[in-house]
Length: 150
Picture (tube, rainbow, N blue to C red):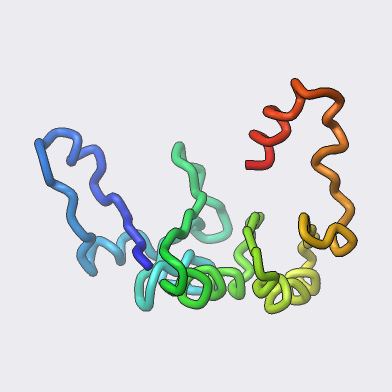
């Protein structure tokens, strides 16, 4: 699995060609609050803060995280699961094709006051009852519905 952070994006726009680099330990520390319970865990010893004190950072950029990697690369075990277990004060949308994350974390989220909603297209009877096709009235509605789900 790879986790990439563009550091110094504005400065990089003023230079030419291959100027991207890995963040140094000192640069990574400036992004962390030092509180792994609240920061997003990127790797051992590398976290990013989305909070300062009790205030969520108001940024002009997205605070979403996208984890990608090949099958068996460790996305779930080393990145997604540790961050889910922290129960950050935010909303989660998780694609969980095997149901493993729901089984391991769902009850804990509910105990912490989260509303856990499941959309199971294989076993609809196990879904929370949301039917994304309910609002499809004719063929023209399909692209809009698909775009809102994706």
